[in-house]
Amino acid sequence: MEIIHLSAECYPVAKAGGLGDVVGALPKYQTQMGHYAKVVMPMYRTKFLYQHDWVVDFKGRTNLADWWFDFTVIKEKDNTLGFDLYLIDINSLLDRENIYGYSDDTQRFVAFQIAFVNWLSHWQHKPDVLHCHDYHVGLIPFMVKYCYDYNHLADIPAVLTIHNAQYQGWMNWDQSRLIPRWDTWKGGLLEWNNTINPLAAAVKNAWKVTTVSWSYLDELRYNSNGLEALFEYERGKCVGILNGIDADVWDPATDKFIAVNYDAENVDEGKQETKQGLCDEFNLNPEKPLVIFIGRLVGEKAADLLPDAIISSMYSMHGNVNFLVLGSGEPHVEWQLRQLTHTFPGNYNAVIGYNEALSHRMYAGADFLLMPSRVEPCGLNQMYAMQYGTVPMVRSTGGLRDTVTDMGDWQGWGIRFTHASIGDIVHAISRAVALYYDDKESLTSMRKHMMQINNSWENSVQQYLNIYQSLKF
Ligand code: ADP
Image (cartoon, rainbow, N blue to C red; front, side, top):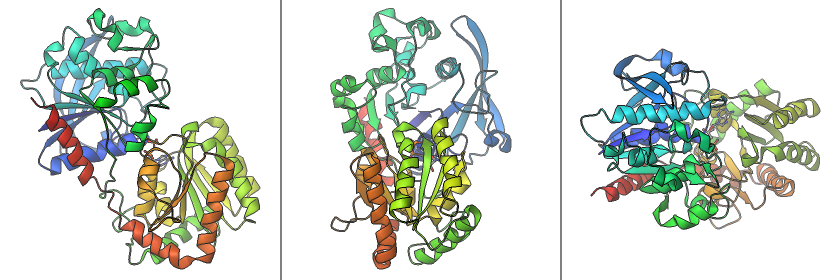
């Protein structure tokens, strides 16, 4: 089958979160299973662009409302990622250093989608499926059905995967002129609550919708930033498929970012050595349990609770615990987390920013990973943590509920709690601290057990293939 993945992110080309990880891995495993998977994404000015060789595949010209623009599709020459990678270059619009965060993001992503369908309309054949990831490419299923210039592509099945329904790409109706000439009788298929809502449009127009865990799919009907009724109505075409982890990138036995490679057999020694390095670098005490947080510092991740939870834990556990935080996001949370470095030197440190290499060392060197998320579609951090023998402490929600059990349950591992509240977080940390000091044997066997859990992509890849297959007529 020929599968076209459309996405704003793809690791290692450009990544801001889990979306990048998934789009960097899923096509690779599909290719390994004998399918022809391609990724098409915007051409940003990232390191990857300059470190690889490219060939021009197509040059086109089209328009965004009354702005005519030229675009170029380039293809990575050596297939280093294990699948065909195409970047669309739109001069002055897409070729920027960051993926998101510009005032003209709407124009950028709509233009990207228009350039893609324009390119596709020049192909001599049709692919078997268009697999759209999140709202940035959510207008494509509508465009191929109802834009007059492109509706000869309407018979190509379009699948939407929702990695995060919080962000929906809302556009005012006056921006409807950005979408290429479309059948105005079909306005209802773009609309939700009086705005154009690209995520809602994708749910309505895609042939099949997947979310990245079963529990998240369930939760969307009660909590999806305004789309609850839509998910209730469309539940028949929605399926949950858990993300996997890419063992080529995330494996402590081969990871190039960590000082000492280890596996389940020598997990305690391997982790201790990496922990020592982290503690030296960040002025922490390697004898104490190391709790880490990695992620976007936003409300979804309950990052606003971290400062108070850390302060309370530090006092209630009499400083017998270390914290290391890596993340960036809301300025007031960043500021509070920075301030804490002065309050608890020797016990706490924070790196505000994005650092892929450090994240690997933290998963490897930490004892516990904290994820108090209010919303977590799948969550990859907890799976990486388990792979590296780090005990996840998670709020029971979305994908966290589907992938982590509680050590109090029969054959359980990990620590689960119910509420995104200071009380629940501090209680979870106190359980972790007790496990670390009082029951090292259980901690070691939990580490070994987690490292043997199979969170690989194989299962999930097959489920995606089954979905594509079911759409073929
Ligand atoms: P989300 O996509 O909602 O941000 P996920 O848990 O699905 O959350 O994926 C997060 C991914 O981003 C993981 O690979 C995590 O290691 C990575 N990540 C998040 N923040 C940072 C950061 N500041 N530095 C390095 N990696 C980060």
